[in-house]
Image (cartoon, rainbow, N blue to C red):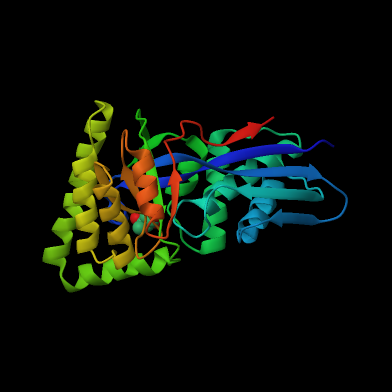
Length: 298
Ligand code: MEV
């Protein structure tokens, strides 16, 4: 049978990381850097060719699709990615979601986005032990999503020129979430208002995005509050300040912090900001918001 392919975007958290763990809203955006998965039926078991470390997600995604459809097959999968792995840009979610869509199609079924998103979240849960649905939902649906824990997400119409700057420092989201929890337990009267404030500025950012307004100041405030929660570090600060000095209207940590990446909002100044991040010895990506989530490729 012929080869089929699917791709899915990576994501950034625009506002609200960490606070979302405590019930506050978050804004997440799919970015224009994608993971592509090609699947062909082949005799024998599973053969995976990939240049990143997401094999466990691929294997689990295939297994869940086989269970979901009640059938299986020998498969050859080839994965190519524009996302640096383990950088907090949702690489494992994008791989999982694209693998699910392509594998189901190779077996003759086109799954709905709801099915893909649900199976994708299960892949992350089973491989990692814990995961919020944010990454797999964003990789599946695309665009900017306003996510309120316990409620259905909504789309926010927004197109943003973004630059992503990656420290190259791998870190554990789980450990950073625990670190913030420990700080909250030690100083609840200090830390809880910070978390509430992050929620407030995420709500304000949603309103501004809907009106096409500037979100630079709010990103800068959000960055300061993340640093206050203890998830900053020297390299992240250098990248944030280099981006602002090069003309970004706002720049902040994106995701769990402690390493990973920053995002900069730099309308009209993308090139200068990319260069400023590279001058710090870091990888810079020119990444707008991707309106399309997972899709089957020709
Ligand atoms: C990590 O991308 C975002 C956190 O808020 C954790 C989570 O929501 O699962 C830090």
